[in-house]
Length: 324
Image 1 (cartoon, rainbow, N blue to C red):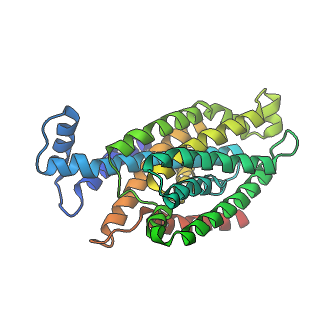
Image 2: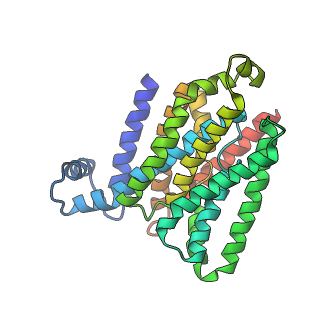
Image 3: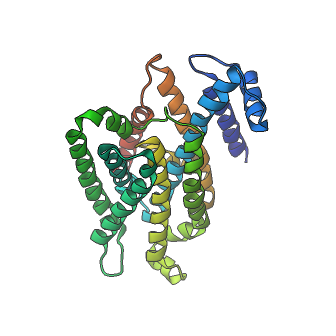
């Protein structure tokens, strides 16, 4: 309980810090007052406009995207009983990225990004499931290998589209690195249903994920429909990932790192791991975005660069730990 309260306090402090820091510094008291004015619908002026209309939507979008990626990563690791599984290893993020790249390359409007991103994520999962299936069974090792292959092919297709549309290279390149710079309240409102529905389904399945850790045979003997559960978790996690990719681009390693930290500091019980991962992932992404905005000021790094620099060494640590 103490650790959870400390995490909540860290999240609140991170939000106030991230909203207050920028080209125009705003004191914490003024930040809180501006948020209060925005929530109450009062007339905004001065720093209130910067806080409510520019910085707070970016921070809230970061919280939602980080939560979606972290809860998806935790669910993938649970359903495959593999600590290296996450939306990227399964090819889900690559499929979503290809869908968004198609929209940019074809010059379609931004309204087409969410549906094509979700379609790309679900199609990549469907192809991976088809390749991995052995009769009515879905062996986890085959599914992860299939996800890696599908993800690699989709990444190659994205690169091909990138090279064929040189006039939009910069736009697509920025998307593939992940970015929260264009966040606004409309993006926050559109992403929220993805996180609530996908994340809500995963939380409802947390007890079943606990049983699945006992092994497929034991889970079946306890009456758990293993293949159906695996499919439902994959679809719900893909929905969360597609939503995150639609509005923030491809941001790596949040879904891999966060569940591991939660497992070490809190518990491996998925009824605890998933909600704490959501809160931790959101906080981690907002902190990463704060670094991205301030490290090379006045220039700004894509947040995906920061998460990769932080998560890459952690991934190598996991590989080394598994080898020993």
